[in-house]
Length: 511
Image 1 (tube, rainbow, N blue to C red):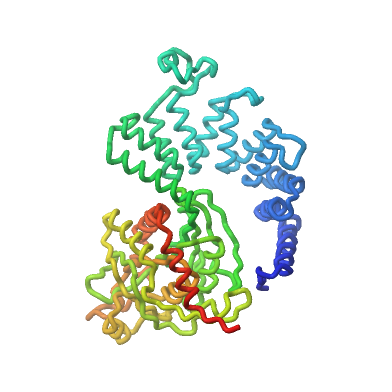
Image 2 (cartoon, one colour):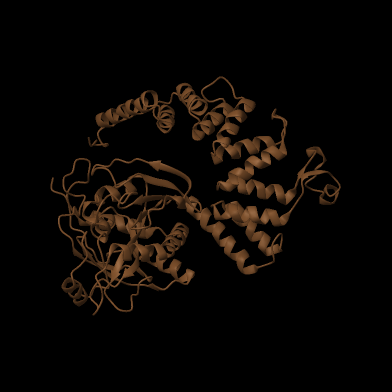
């Protein structure tokens, strides 16, 4: 059933049915991940923290679900859903969560065991706490790595009362559980920065500048300072960047703090769940265009639901990858191409949101498609590719065919005569819908083959495409990752407003 989330009564019905679904999945089917969702539902929707705490606690202790251990640990620490907080009891939940490989629980356990203060009644155990923090850092928790960096910068004294931050000379004569080690501090700080902690990036910049723990390097100092600035601007602008993966790029391991979001739109379900999290501190959402099991052929992809889902979760940009065949000699297999135009040879695909779908926008949208792609996002992809030293063509017209079959030779020759540089099966209607949604959209294409237009050229095959894509997919991933940072650091957002204004001016409403 599709809900119109603009109508209050349907919102209420949707919310109630969601609770029923979660209760059934938790209590009847005994699925730990659904029990955790039930806890989130009771917390966020029902505001019943007592019941939410009971669900999280049970899911942690009975079903060994690490995320629920972290949650009930946080509740217990601050007294949420109970009369008062209890740090020692919270520690037991954090430790159990850490044993279940929940990085956030390891971080909290480590910080409690290494912290000092007059109101903290937990017995200090620095070696044990250090191991928890190290495990959290190893599992890519940026704050844990940053915390470890700080421990190695100052050292950890055996008796905290002996330590005087204003008298470094005196501190040299006291006993330490962990001695100051700037080389170790640099390694942990560098990893924390790579995971998106802007304060760690600033620290690494200073280490390079002073030569603390690493050889002096003004160039690297400047680079890490700029990364820290990028991350700060990204937090201030609160952009979220969507990534649409093509063949071979449906990889959710790019994210930190990864969560799965099962989204429903007025246009149906997208191809798969959205993988949300952060790429070096920038909020992003990844959607496998064909589904994570590649279950949808190009003509069966619900492009409208895909784009709407990304917009619905707050994405302002969409960066896409696509496998393409080359129609020109100098666009060689393994090359990257940042698309700037298209020729549509598809049929039967839903190419607009403005078709009276309940819950969708109203009117008729006569959208101009010159330029087809967002120039700001295109320049970010080009800049990222050039910085990596990858061979990247800055323009390319994609002829988009219906698929799933490849072109005949006559078709391939015709596409060349039309001025096409590349041929693929997915750019349309994706680019059209993204523009109609007011999003900044750009695509980087990876050339996998020469299609079949060349003399003595064998027909393109699936195995050939996949082999070439697998060999070079890291290039496309590198470009996307760096382009995310470039776009997040962009201070001028007028281009985003321009996209929305263009759509608004293209809509004809008949009351």
